[in-house]
Picture 1 (cartoon, helix red, strand yellow):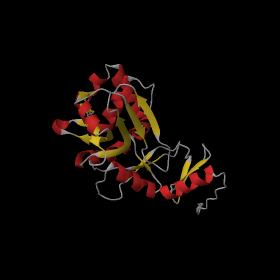
Picture 2: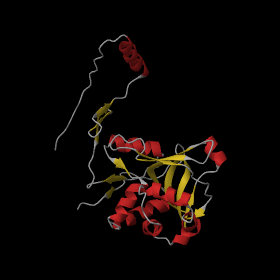
Picture 3: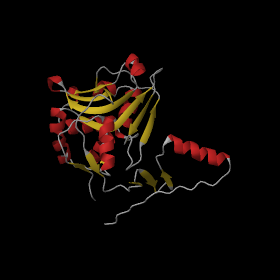
Picture 4: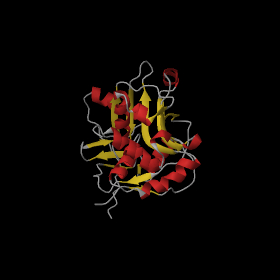
Length: 250
């Protein structure tokens, strides 16, 4: 079976989560998420983690995992593959994502809310606590008493609800899983990922997204064009849309 692999970094530039997502869209590649890293762990492809450790040390690894916090309560929406036009976004609703400032992974897993949060991070709702701990230990090369997680306070969620999930070596030899970084300001490294064992259901051409499973085509349009279409529909007139489709078969 082909294993999930990380794509070597093409440059040494720092980018925000949005900037990385767009870069990988342009390259028709998938940006790595925390869930992809867990897939690599399950496949025992541990040499891929060794290649990531320099990124953790130099800056941090910006993933395609994003959390949108509720401004009024502790609920949140976790998204993998955010803004991707190459693969589907995966959205997980969390009813209660507490404030961790910071919390060690073992303490976090003592609560149902903490377990639910970490299962959402790796996109596996049935994984046991000991497997989650071993994953982060293997990923970071750190013992569990050196692995901590951060989430924003409620006041921080009110002012800036959208946060990226970043991975970094912190001070005193710790490994930090930060769900606290403002997605538009914090820039770090990132990686693409090749998922050979997965079926690719989405393809893009000229910024249009073709979804095989859903049998849909999503086409970006200017507001003026959208208004014109709505007007035609209200008049019960036909709407004809032309687009240029380019497909290259190898």
